[in-house]
Length: 231
Image (cartoon, rainbow, N blue to C red; front, side, top):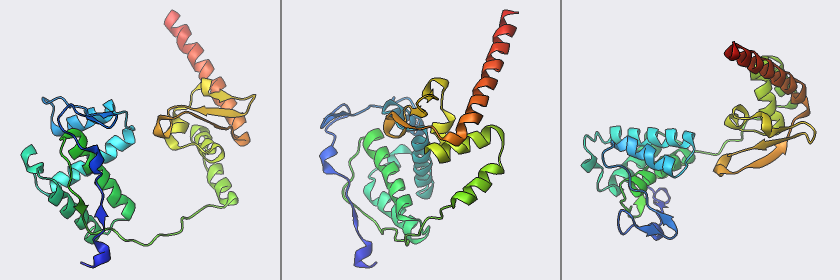
């Protein structure tokens, strides 16, 4: 292994736990329900710490992949973890040829498992670092975007217009509510976005007619459902 391939992962000793209910520099350790299985404990801790559902899914996938890689059958086999994590991460870089961001994602998932669920500290983890070249992203021209949007219709087209014109992430667009839309100010309120933060963004001009039509359609559906309930 070349010297420059052996860069260290810094696991951060300032977050050490002295006990299962210890306080770590302002952050309280969460003790998972001991009656739950390992993966259920991971989900429980992540939800108590308000992680995004996509982060939960991603971390759980990496943890399962790590367990399968080492053919672990019991919780005790997870410990000690430093060497096992090094082998797994190195395999991702050498045999999996993953990008550095993918390797870091796997490391963060395992760091969460050992620190937050098992309450075990890493030593300094050393592994072969992924070193794939950085590629320039493919960006569509405005004309190409117009062709893509024109090929769509209905709700799908409306969501894409909001994603492109208002800079929304996918789940932000899908979770948009009536009270988050301000036609007069031409403004959208994005609630509980990335980092659990709210923010304002512009309402794209091109999406306004379709958005109004969508709201009118929903209003009629709601009125029909209310009438049906009243008999």
